[in-house]
Amino acid sequence: MPDAPTSDARTIAPPPAPTAHPAAPASPRRRDALVASGLVHRFGQVVALGGVSLTIPAGQSVAVMGPSGSGKSTLLHCLSGILTPDAGEVTLGGGRVSTLRDADRSRLRRERFGFVFQDGQLIGELPARENVALPLLLAGMGRAAALAHADSWLERLGVGGDMRLRRPGELSGGQAQRVAIARALVHDPAVIFADEPTGALDQATGHEVMQILTTTASMAGATLVVVTHDPHVARWCSRLVEIRDALVHSDTLATSTPLPTTGTALPRQEDAR
Ligand SMILES: Nc1ncnc2c1ncn2[C@@H]1O[C@H](COP(=O)(O)OP(=O)(O)OP(=O)(O)O)[C@@H](O)[C@H]1O
Image (cartoon, rainbow, N blue to C red):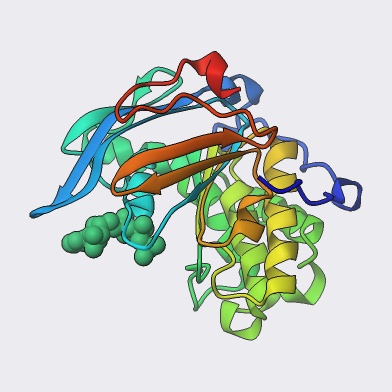
């Protein structure tokens, strides 16, 4: 694995102070490991995940790589409760994710997970600050407090001032991804899932976005799971999981310490640190 890029964390201010609100609870929940045990998922005859087990300690950044069609997005979707696996289980801090009822799973996704997609998936009709405030509003925070919290995140990620009031279509790709990162972090999630977060950006902007994503996630104590085709993106993360043919093919820490991976075997948590 190549050397991790130099992170200029000093240029990014610490996260805004958490508010005394369920949408931004204090830190203990962040100690939750995300664990996948024997995940199997099929689309008809296609086996997209053939028995994948992973333990991701709280606060770790993991890049998921592999050839097209190997099962990366399916893994991300199962880990984040978007898809229900046909077999196996996902837990966060010991609490079940994959087998929750739909309503509870949606709530868990809203409150404990943040998402960054290739195209941002911001709401086109809403200004940046309202896009960012949305997770807080959905969690019941008052409008003024939610917008103030959103503003402080946007400011911190370099899209403050006038840009807060622009709609996504009036922002550059890099600016829109900064807004998407602010939206993913604003409610203080335990885990951020990013699917090709730099896929629509040029290399320099992608580098900048990864720097912001990894630095802010780390400062906030959030676990980060990034699906990417790009080794330059992957090297921002402290662990690389390679998926091939619906299974974990390799699992490596940035220190180049190989982790035991044998099909469905579940690595012990201390192995993955
Ligand atoms: N909704 C779906 N319906 C049917 N088959 C699907 C569906 N989604 C994924 N698949 C199939 O499941 C397998 C794994 O797909 P997945 O999207 O997880 O791979 P990936 O590694 O993320 O690919 P890529 O890098 O191209 O995005 C592939 O064979 C794919 O064609």
